[in-house]
Each structure stands twice: as C-alpha cells, then as structure tokens.
Amino acid sequence: MVKIVAMGDNVVDCYLSQNTMFPGGNCLNVSVFIRKFGGQSAYLGAIGRDAAGDAILRALTEERVETSHLRRLEGPTAYCVIGHRDADRVFVTFDLGVSMFEPSDADFEFIAGFDAVQIGQSSGLDAYLPKISRLVPLSYDFSNKYDDDKISRIAPLCTLASLSAREDGLEYARALMQSVLARGAQWCLVTRGSQGAILGHGEEIFEVPAAKAGLVDTLGAGDTFIARTLFGLMNGEAPDALLSAAAVEAAATCSYFGAVGHGVPTQLSVDISAIRAAYPGL
Picture 1 (cartoon, rainbow, N blue to C red):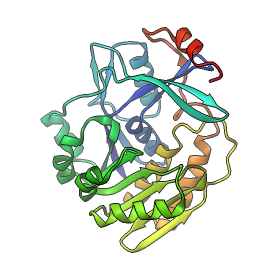
Picture 2: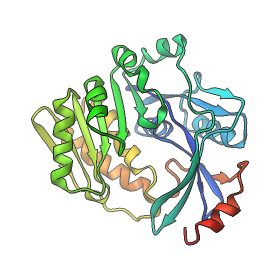
Picture 3: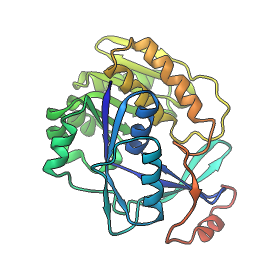
Picture 4: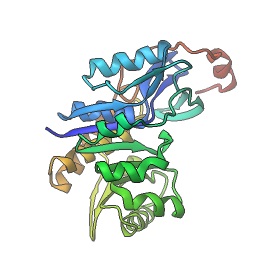
C-alpha cells in the first residue's frame, strides 16, 4: 500500500455565509484525500487546544489518518475566513495561530518511513526541505507563490512540484512547467482551475480538461488534484490515467462545502459578525 505523510499547514476554513468552519489547509487536505484514494496516510502538524483543534483532530480520526505526530499546543488553531462569489472562494482574513512548528529528530525519523512527503508553501518549512528531500521523495505545493529564485531553490529537491496558474493561459502554464522541470523537478503539475491541468516529466507533457462538476465550492479542488497525482505516481500508474482520475476527483470535491467536509459551527475568538458586516455580499 502506498504510504504518504503530509507535513505542515492546517487551518479551519470559516465560511461567512454558513457560520461553519471546515478543517483544511494543503497538507491536512492531502492527508485526507490520500486515505480516500486507498493509500495509508499520516498528518504531522500543530493545532491548538481549542474547538477548532478539536474539529481538526476529530476529522482526521474519522478519516483514519494517522496523527501520532500531531502536536496540540497552547494557543489558537490557525484559521482562514472565507466568503464566496457564486461557487468560487474569496479569502478575507487569516491567522496562522500555532500552526508553524520546528520539526524534531523524531519527526524526521518518522517521515523517513513513508513513500513520499507532502509539504505546502504555507507550512513554513522551506528551510528544512533539503534535509527532508534526502530522507523521502518530496512533493511540494508552490500554489501561486513562486518566482525564479524560489523555483531555483526548491524545484531540484522535488519529486513532484505543483503550481497553480488558474488565471493564466496554456502557453504560460507550459512555460512555467518547463522552467520547473529544467531546474530539476522530476515531475511538475500545473493546475489551471476550470481549464484542467498539465503534468510534465522530462520532455513529455500530459494534459487533461477539467471534469464536469456541479459547482458548490471550489475550495480544495487543487489539493485534490495534487493528492491524486501524487498517489498515482507513487502507485506506478500511467500519467494519462492518473491525471484523468485526478480531474474526476477534483470535480467531486467541488460538489460539496469544505475541502474535506466535516463542518461544525464556527467557534473562534474573533468577531465573525463584524467581519461579515465589513464584507457584504460574500
């Protein structure tokens, strides 16, 4: 069985329109999706001893994600307040809470027992990537936070590098992919929102259109694409097949609220009603 550990960011996504918070964050989402796709997964991160942290731990437990290296710390769990225009999300404000952490020797020993590790750009772990990539194949999500310097530093460490270019054309996405591959990434995934995605390896480029979906909420679709692509690569699947499967799974994620579901009433030490009043129409 494919074994993948996700190490880094978590958050509760607080939806203004529903007064509901959902567990989320790239690494947490990937850990849940890997389990859904049939793999064995673990999540390594830090949450607070509060209602939001309780919601995250409960969701991970119900999804059968291993949490033996999940820290519970004094202080608030990370949160992000989200509005929506139609089905698309609008990020309003956030707080990283206690989600940033320094890996221990025990953490490094733990992740070395997996087939791959997923880390996102929001995890605050970039300084540790060289060490991590020597222990286990690295999958890194740049999201839309990349420049030439960052690509040059991180791409050579990546078995899979993932980037978002949802607002840009195919020519730009292809050029971005070639830049990442030329700097040393073994595989590069560029997700393009409603335009689908491309996956590159060496001189080969594989493309897939977005699958049809009943759009409810697009949050988590990119993380679904990353998780299914990483799972497929580690499972030895053909690129065309795994990319098509990823498109279908990403469309399915868009059909419900929250990246991984498990919504509970919002409980934060901030005035959500004041935020809602400041952003009418979301």
